[in-house]
Amino acid sequence: MSTVRFNPLDLKSKSTLGAVKMGEVTKFSLEFSRPSNPEHVYMLLTKDGEDSVRYELDRKSLSPEGFVLYSLDLTVNSSGLYHYIFEVECEKKITTIGCGGDLTGMLTSGVAWQLTVYDDAVPAPTWAKGGVFYQIMPDRFFIGGDRLKTKDKAKVVYRNDWDGIPVFKPDENGKILNNDFFGGNLRGIIKKLGYLKSLGISCIYLNPIFEARSNHKYDTGHYRKIDPDFGTADDLKELIKKADKRGMKIMLDGVFSHTGDDSIYFNKYGNYDSLGAFQSKDSPYKSWYSFSDHPNFYESWWGIDTLPNVKEENPAYLEYINGEDGIIKYWTDFGLGGWRLDVADELPDVFLEHASRAAKSKSSEVMMLGEVWEDASNKVSYSYRRKYLQGKQLDSVTNYPFKEDILHFVRTADAKKLAHTVNVILNNYPTHTVNNLMNLLATHDTVRLATSLGDSGDASTREKRAKAKLLDAKATYEKVKLASVLQFTLPGNPCVYYGDEVGLQGFEDPFNRRTYPWDNLEKDNKAVLKHYRRLGKIRLENKAVFSDGTYKLLTDENGIFAFERVGNKETIVTIVNNSDIVYEFETKKEHTDLLTNKPYAGKVASKSAVVLKLTSLIPVKNIKR
Image 1 (cartoon, helix red, strand yellow):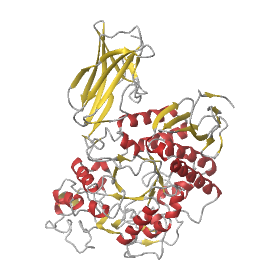
Image 2 (cartoon, one colour):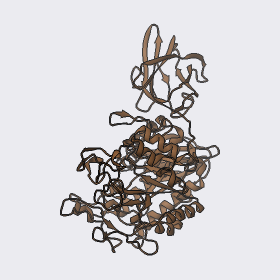
Image 3 (tube, one colour):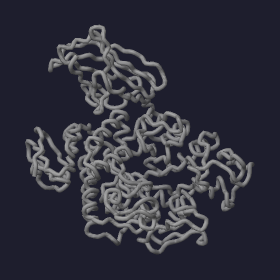
């Protein structure tokens, strides 16, 4: 037996790309080169935690290329995480076929392929596909109208230096309070909708906007109130309405695994007119929290005592958030496009299912997107296998796997690692999840994109990181351009963290949460902005391809990462040359590089990228400069 051909990302081998829908038929086909003539070929299918089931493949006629074809029509009637391998019986000898490093079949070696099976009871939203997301921390984006200052000034710092460094030093008790406010608000976002439209934005994802003590708002004080420093519920309605007129949806950040200690629910400091769980065992909210010794000892998020954990499965809490009159439905009815669920790993299945049902009670077009940092199809958190993508929970997730390997490729020219990660995600996720992925390169939780790709000199202390600047900003911004081209053209939807489109710099929190430098853009910053606007226009003008065009790798050799997205009528080819040589990619017709809007000469310079709309291709080759 000399050669076997099987690739789950090739429709000739597996009739459904990626995860399969429960109850639908998927054809698996293996090809064996002659003179191989297996007597029997089997698939061994194993559901997570259960015994394997053996299926025999039928022998078919020879393929046009002379390969012996064996096929199986498989229907799986239960959602879950499955794995499969093949066994070949030939002359009474059993040979296994497993998954190789590039997902293709390997004789006598390899591991099992993953097969995710999902329940398609609720249709996935369609509005996000092919769009561009934009993440905003409201306090740091733009001040609209009169500045709102509603908090006790003895407890917060209202900044008057818009371009200043956020407070990063602990107070006299050793705590970082996150209590300095620069004044950005919802009306500021409304005023900048024209700017966002110029970037091709189709969805504005807002970090938390509910009432809270901190500037980041992940310590919710009241789920039914907009933080008064940000504005009012009417301001949110106006933002949603005016964004909608410009073709943009609003997505809110739902922080439901914990509340703030300074909240109407916990009320540790007595700042709310309520009987909080900290104050009394008779509090209506007491059952939401876990106390080991009331009131001073309680579970909190990652041990941070200002963020007491809630029991998400508690019936009272479930009803408060996901019930008929609950928080999810209340705000969704304002006209939201969806929710980004914070720390989805800490939200149990029952909560996610209830939250999704509440959000989609009026329309399946409401998106439920979870913050997950790993492969969400097989994630294990707290020793429990998660079911995020198996139906009834999440439509899609944050795509950190792409982020890590895009940045790795730009830093090291390791195209194979990125190609492998893309293949794994495409194999493991449902197609609708892939099309709705949030492809990010930086967030409020990570180092800024430019800083992550450049050299900022000595950054050994927080004091030095606070003042650090790129030693060669212009060269770094060229790397930012390479990374963003991949972010905007790979499957899924790019999500730009506010300010990254002008090369805003910053290390970890709070340095990655500086204000947008509206009045402080230099020539190099404006060049980056022009590049992002061009990327947004490319996606808008080719939305059909980027919405659900199939992905095919063209090459991952020698520091070149090239792939195509194939739609019904057109093909988009992305080539990123991170090598030290010129790369030649010839086409049968003359085409325009969409990035520069100039004729494409058939060559891709070192450390550069092209994006082409093609109708036909011929073989490619490398040439040295």
